[in-house]
Image 1 (cartoon, rainbow, N blue to C red):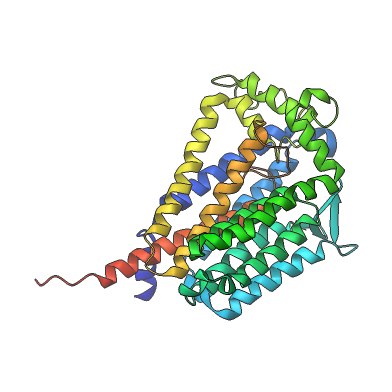
Image 2 (cartoon, helix red, strand yellow):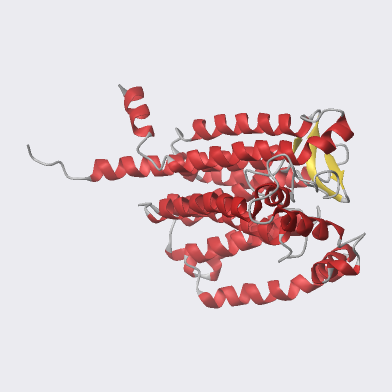
Length: 383
């Protein structure tokens, strides 16, 4: 009887969350194949190389999303789970710098490679931090109104940001930084403490740009890509060519020209440019309408939570997805300096895909259990 009631309650949550997640991820598999087929054939002798990896990630992510939707998320609230999530995140980020384990690419060491498996710890650390914030803040809402109460969140967030910055990966560092500010705000921190934190952080950004020459080059390429069309400005120019070539309705699926090794990272960080070329502005609008709907359902789920832990947890999951989606769109369109940041659920990369789908499963599980709690709390009508 318990199993029957469990399955019966599965459909009582916001079913649109896992449906949208699966649709976007499936579209991502097709898009990865379209964007990578030529380069994969040239580089690996297999046009399906990246698509097959993405398909594996999609299947594993789908299984994980379904599995965690049955999870009693309130078990994640314990102090033990809270600190495990932080310690594991920090250890994984630190292992990136261990010779033989860390994998470097284009001057950045952001992955752990064991055998044929590659993991990007920063994708895991983002959600480890969200879980920590939710568990810590749920102990007492009032304590977050003091600077002392917010210090553990700030300390953990800064440690994660520093480790990610050392990879280096400034784009993900910015995402985690904005996530931290969002968590502090939702936790109830007073505005004056945000000024104490925000002013030094804003002053630090120019310093971080100056101390790394490649960041200055990226900034100059953002301001005027045509000043170095064959070097720093090349990628942004090719991205703009792709978007411009797409027009209103695109060139058609699998008919991108920029994917023929003109546009670097066409299957990952700049996959949105290929989507824009093949599906046009209308296609991008539809894609972001789906992504926006997913964000809206996440906000709606958070607003309907009847306990602080589930509110912070669902808010954090929604916020990090929204931040990363917006950042990627700004980079590809030239509205933000070029950074290595994937488009969630779409770009090639199994760690990001699986973890994002898993998080959406947690979000759906929250809506399902919250709706069950609401039903159980309703007064029984007399017959």
